[in-house]
Length: 126
Image (tube, rainbow, N blue to C red):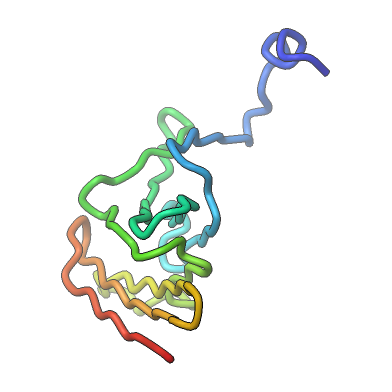
């Protein structure tokens, strides 16, 4: 199907797209807040990105939250939010990431408080 045909067809109501400025290598959906999605870049350099996206029901779109996006060493191979919904009233949103380059392995834990990164913990594994 060519682009002209694709563009003329209406998009189903339950389909949402996000145009990333880089190739996406990893993705995770938060169990605590299903409107939050983490995406990790694949850039063949040391500096990569993890963006936290928020789903807007009003515009049916995914939008990055700049205050929650952060640089990541090497492409993140895995992203994982806390695997189960957190207790009511908990405002922290933990995200674990990992990356590998050669024999180096890195595990990173990022804690978000509402719309701010409150703690980054890097662990270098050999």
